[in-house]
Image 1 (cartoon, rainbow over the protein chains, first blue to last red):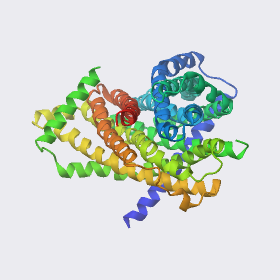
Image 2 (cartoon, rainbow over the protein chains, first blue to last red; image 1 turned 30 degrees about the vertical axis):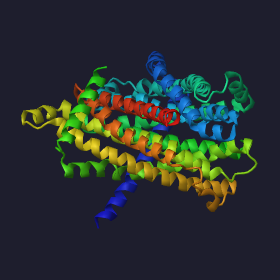
Image 3 (cartoon, rainbow over the protein chains, first blue to last red; image 1 turned 135 degrees about the vertical axis):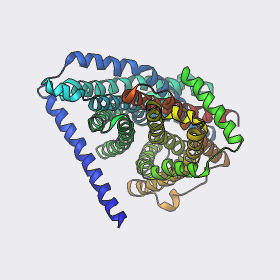
Image 4 (cartoon, one colour; image 1 turned 30 degrees about the horizontal axis):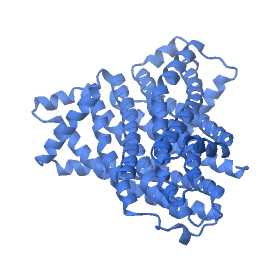
Length: 259
Length: 243
């Protein structure tokens, strides 16, 4: 009979998690209208989250650009369609791999960090102290971080796109021996703005996912150091699932409505 | 830099232990169950979405240069085996297993359990790192296979419903060469091997209560995802240029 109860427990856990996520999202949105939150904390978070993630985003995007173009090498050699390398290197980076991988790296650096910090504050009863001082943890801790995460991820994706394309361009020049001019031409011929737009929509959505999931897990921590570790693990797992699911949904809708 | 030194030290100590066959088989199996079997659901669900995405994106690019979709399946399957399945499984493994290891070992470190092991003359590397290393390498390969199969299968559904490519046409292995297969397998093994080293090193470095464990876990997921992406690029370029 044990498996019956484990099915029931699993279902309850999942529904509790999904409910918790939407509840957090609703609370965050409620605090955003009218926008009353700590702007000093927002600036601090924008620096910690946005500016200090730039190196890791540049490195990830550059390497991803290299990988995407190297992977097209066989097709380029077989068909001689040099434009294909640029199309894949540019389009895949802008609309698909760029936002998704930058989102994953960002969730590791920022989402996991937020869970750990919130969790530590819950475990050491700092959140209760805030409440006792009549400071709303939502407005003071969560909402500034939410805004900072969404804004930073969108801007970082733009930076990442540039470096991803540079990586692809360098690889196609040095490995596939396509000259710079024809790579740029092929890139400009594809629908670059459309791809950039869908990529940025994805980035903003992933930002919402990352901050909502990390908040939910962070404030749900129970039981000391072990609990904090488990919460971080749960946070990154759920974020990855959410990112790829929503990635598919957005791509699908984009195709449906005239992509 | 300090972490890098620690990683190299863990690597050499683990290889030394494995070389002397100082391995606890039941612990390896337990860790394999934790890392491999219990990640199946997470990896399958995520790879299902990635497979559908891959087909959508490939088809939309293909529509611009080719008149029809007869090579869609062959292209997606080749790309899946050599690139998408290994790198995505590697990332998912670093997310689930990497953070898990860092959290476990970090908790043991800050609660002085590692010191207690040393006092009882038990080698922490031999007891903690070696089983995780072997288990995760195996899990990397088996989850890579599971991920590739799931991704190709869901891609087939999208190819049929969205682009009317029949499953018979889709399931074509004509682009897949030995070269692609060895590349995919090498990537899976290399990532499965590297992730526990990096995340265990981050766990061993943890200090200072629950805050330290949180920091170690965050560092582990960032470093191991970075290692996965770098290994992927390195192996891709190496296979393409040298072989």
